[in-house]
Amino acid sequence: MDATDFPDDLVQTQAAWNATYNALAAPRLRDTTALRRRLLRLSVRLWWHPYWESASSVPAARSALRQQTRAGGAARAA
Image 1 (tube, rainbow, N blue to C red):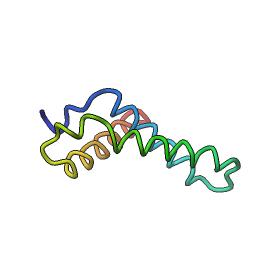
Image 2: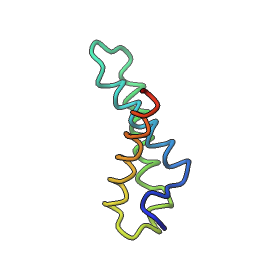
Image 3: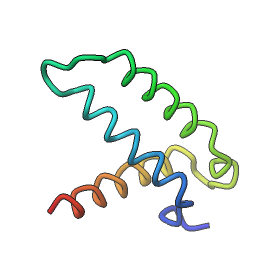
Image 4: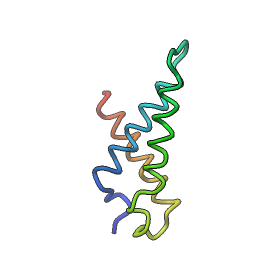
């Protein structure tokens, strides 16, 4: 399996994690508890996704997923 051939649900979960993390980083936030809980749930879903059982190098694949998702988010924002 190619390191950039990630399942759609994994990519969507990583994108949601990025969006939640960015929302928490915003200044003067209210209701951070809900965002922190969401970030924790998304982190668990990312960590235990079945894709990682088939990845040859999990740390490299996790890094590639983060980079691909950030690049996709930047492309959508432009």
